[in-house]
Length: 221
Image (cartoon, rainbow, N blue to C red; front, side, top):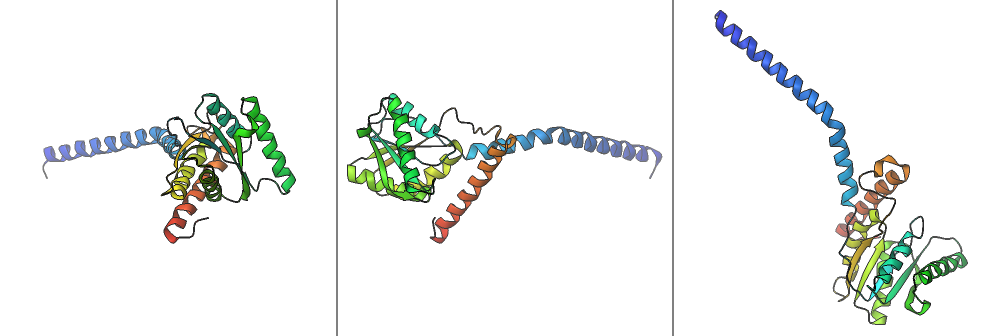
């Protein structure tokens, strides 16, 4: 190898080293942004929202840490998007009397939005899962001759809710839409910054995975 060729190889090695170093620095600088973008995407996947539309009933799923779902249903009713409100019952309280008290509290709140009690329906049985809530509301809607509904739930619960209601209502002739609560504390862009957000997201992904696996195996909870 002559001296000229040696110098060229040396320059080439320097350029390669410099390029690799710059690339590594860029990666290190960009990594936090890439991680944040990935976390944002994980939260965003869980949130789905159908456009508001006129329906026969608004279904308020139970659960959640507050009454924000009921308040959202009240706002949708004020917008004259439905004639009926359907409340579901889940195992939120250990005593039946407490469950009845909770339904009464929800009705009182809905009354503040101008919804009379005779326009509020409640599933008679207590559900133990979102799938059972869907089954009970479908039965109630068929008994009442209702053919369309808007399901209100928390943002992080909206994707799984859509999948479950689509599965349960398939072939029934009843159309369902899903609306997440507006102004909710859960944000796809910041969920990882709070213990509540992290817990809700991890829990929801585990439940979503269990549901999808249950679909494949035929064992759906």
